[in-house]
Image (cartoon, rainbow, N blue to C red; front, top):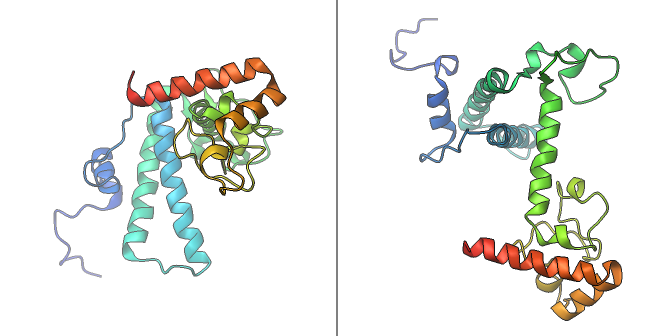
Length: 226
């Protein structure tokens, strides 16, 4: 089939540079920083999450794939490839296509060779960064200073705020220092701060109350830029 009508300045996705890809994926100049492993992780995770949702919704026939959807999936896949190459060059992360076959998907890690000295396989890197990301997220919430959180709070934070006393599932806090029990439950169940401190004391003692109050002040001060 002739390509005679194809504009000569039209590049295929494989021909786009890294900067051109980022400009297409992150419109309006909202290109995130790429100064650390965490920066790269966040972009890869966000692109992967959006792509997964598009494909999942299309497979379940909740949406019909548009040309824009297909283009985004291709662009994000190519951009993720560039990012994994940056990881290889700067942080010795072994890309998926260079990993042993059993390490190309998340799953069983038994009976596989160790990564070369100073290197790490991609999914091992990804899981370590994911844990660090949610650990940082947890520390940025008042919940990290509260003894009333659920067991394994960092793991729980991946799907909801890890509160052991909140009636139901809480997706996020109004502000990082606002306990959900004082702001988002029904009026008949809402706690005053006096009730909150009393329950914290029963569970963790007076020291837990002091830690909670200190964390609350720190978070509010950080928000104000103090």
